[in-house]
Structures are given as structure tokens and as C-alpha cells.
Picture (cartoon, helix red, strand yellow):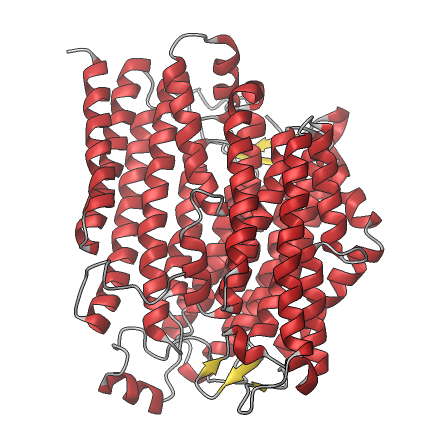
Length: 529
Length: 99
């Protein structure tokens, strides 16, 4: 990286080189978020939602198209280069990152559809978040038909942070991106229209634990900076391979940054926030977190452990083995006892994080491509599943308790059938995308010499299959409850999200080759350094 | 005084903060403990910047201050909302979501 040679005047500060075209996807999303804030200030209330929707969908689509254009730019990858380090070393633009960003943008687009759904209530978000639940102010707000349209800019800020998180090539950028993606999500969790106490509680828990874990992440960065004298991932890697002194700082740094990243993906023993937050948050926000945040956090985890700690595989692997085994087993076993559908999916998400970790541990191109494929297919299936949950409703809101789902298959075979398809996908039954994904990650893990991990993985998949199938049995083979929940006719947005999820789950199960090829093409040169 | 002393001080502050998060019950106090942890990180960054003789650590410290300020905005908003709803800022009272 050469500085611009503007040193004609002594003492002049050389201007940094910013590759705007390569950073455009992130810039587009962030600008759209800022435009959203202005819309909130200047557009009349009646028009706001429509304008926000246009801005959000247009920016996400434009960012996706631009990501594809960058991925197709041959000059970026000329002479076998893995990619380019943009913005003076702050952002890595390489194929795995572009794959992850593209995945996040598609998943965010579908999540925004769920967030925008207003067919059942005025909105899924509280009319006036500042009014206490049950207070006269809240009632007045409801009668006046107030709606929080601030959620759209918040979502865009979060998505922008998610795009930057896996792309950051230095730990300072990564920390800022982590906060940019987390802070809007803390707020979104607390904005549910129904069951507001649960929603508040989820927001508080997520916020306190999230801030706690990011403090650990930051202290880890401080240790690594103390060890290497730089926050750049490649400099840390270089220092780790040459500098034998000060191992304490290095290992403390690896452990603490690892805690921060593993918290975000919800690996055991840092998983305790996940069920509470997923259950309490508004379901469309849960869909966003369970898909996009997980993809982004895995992207960052992969980049840090493959680039900065790539030469120290033998040092971090044993600890990650323990985490992966615990994550798979604990996630699958505790899920068996769950009676709430959203909580069940939260524990299932923990178990899935464990399956992906087996591929991360392989520290190879196969591990990377397996994780990429798994993340993409799991993300879209998850959004579909949460979209179905928004359709099964009691008079007071969503019917999330499993007992209310009894006999759903007899009353609404189509919706129950699609949900069963998603569950089979999660369980990894052949002909669904979940099977191909599991096959890819376990194959990578075996290639990395982690046979015991794969055995644990297969056993916990079997345990997980038990509770997925139990939900299917409850839906199809038990008698409907007398005053059972109503299955509402989905609006265009939710219907599209469900259909996309179902089609993707089947399509990538039957014809996985195109996406698998794309993932392995993206992964074969690993990350840029 | 060697910079190492500052590192030890920052580790001690970080530990006090972490223990505070784990043992205190009031959400606001927990939040203050998290801020203490962030400030301990800042101290470590600045001390390491002095040790290595480059400015990266000091720049990081500025960013952390901004991030901490943003976190206060979001955090206090959430804590206010839950306090208004429950008339209590104790994290033990917020226990509807479990098992």
C-alpha cells in the first residue's frame, strides 16, 4: 500500500486512498440509512412507510447488484490475487467476503419484507415505544394509529454494520462494525407491539450481555495490539509467526477476541442470551438476527481465525473443539425440553452454530466453502420458518406455544406442510438444503482430521431430528385444540418470504451444485491478507 | 514508571468491572461496570501505544470513547423503557423469559 505522493509541501498530510467503487455496497446501505433518518424528519407521516420501503428495498438491491459486479471484476483478482485491501488497509475485498455480503443482502431483503408486513396489525412494532405498556399514553397512541417508521433506518444501519463486520481487515474497524450492527438490533428487539414486557426484557438482556461481550472483544484487541504493535490482522499474523516473546499477550488476545465473536454466533458457553432474545424480540427482527447477524458474525470469526491466527491453528484448535462439541450437544439436548416455537428455533440455531464451527475448525478452503454454503442455505430456511410463525395467530398476537400448534396440519395443511419442510431442512433430511449443508461441513471437518467432532455432530443431528420431528407429529398427528389459533392468509410480503424460503430449501437440496460451486470458487483462495 | 504498571492497572480495572457486571443487580450499575471495562481497555491501548511508540492505540482509544457514548444513548433508552414499565431497574425482576 503506497501513500499518495502529495509530499510536495513539507509536513503535508498525504490524503488516504479510498476505493469508493469497491466499498460501494456498504456505502449505499449506510447512505440509505441516513436518507431514512432524513425521511423521518421531513416526509409527512402518511407517506413515510412507503418512502422508507422504496429506499430500503432499492438500496439493498443496488448493493447486491454492485457486490455481484465487484465479484465479477477480473482486475481485482488478476494474477491469482486473493483480492484487494481497500481503504488504507481497513477493509478486505475478496471473494469469501463478497459471498458473505451478497448472502447478507439477500437475507436482509427478505427480512425487510417481514418487517414491513402490516396486514395483521398496523405494524409489528410498538406505536409509541416511549409509552409504558398499559399506560394511558399507550392507548392514546394506539387510537391515533401511531407507527414507528424509524425501524427501517435502524435495520439499514444494522445491515450496513453486518456488511462491514466480516470485511474489516483491522480489529478497530471490526469493533466499530460490531457496535454499528449491535446497537440498532438492541433497540429493534425492544420495539414489539404485542407482549411488550417480554420485548423490553429481551432488549435489556441482549444489550447488557452484548455490551459485556464487546468489552471482552475490545480488551482482546488491546492485548493483540500490545503483542504486535498493530491492529491490522495481517500484522498480527506476521508478529505471531516471528515473535516468540510475550506469548501471554497473544493467547489472552486470542481468547478474549474469541469470546466476543463466539458470543455473537451464540456458541456455548456464550449462548444464554439467544433463547431469551429470540423469543422476546418481534418475530421479523428475530428472523433478521437469526439469519443476517449469524452470517455476518461467522464471516468475522472466519476472517479473524483464518487471517490473524491462521498460523496458530494448533493453539486455538483444542479450545474450539470443546466449544463446538458443547455447542452442538447443549443446543440439541436443551431444545428437546422447549415448549415455545421461537425458543425451540433459538436452541436449534445454537446447535447449527456448532455444526458450522466444525467446518471453521478445519481451517482450510473446504472448511470455508462448507461454512459459506451452510450459512446461505440455513439463513434462508430460518427466515422462512420465522415467517410461518408470524402467520399462526391468537387474538392477542402470535401463538408461539407448541401446544397451540396441535393439529395445525388438519386445519391448514399448506402452512403446516411448509413449516414441516423447513423443520426437515433444519434436521438435514436428504433432498433439503440442510442435508447438503451438513454434508459439506462434516466433509470439511473430516478433511481437517476432526473425525470425533463429526461423530458428535452426527449424534447431535440425530438428537435434533427428534425434536424437529416431534413438532411435525404435534402438527399432523394430534387433535386440534378447540379454540385453536387462526392461520391467517399471508400478505404479499410474508407470502413471498415463505415461498422463497421453501423454494430455496428444496432447490438447494435437489440441485445444490450451482451454489456449492459458487461457494468453493469463493473460498479457494481464502481471505486476502 | 514503566508502561507495564499501566497495563497491570488496566487489567485490575477490567477485572473489577467484569466482577461488578456479574454480582451487581441494578441494571444501571451493571452498565457502569461495563463502561469501566471499556475505560480499562482505553488505558491499555494508550499504554501499549506508548510502549510501541506508534499512534494506533491512541486512535483506537478515541474511537472507543465515541462508541461508548453511542452505547450510553442506546442503553439508557432501553433501561428507561424497562424502568417505566416495571418501576424497577433490577435485573432480577426481569425474569419472564426463562427455560
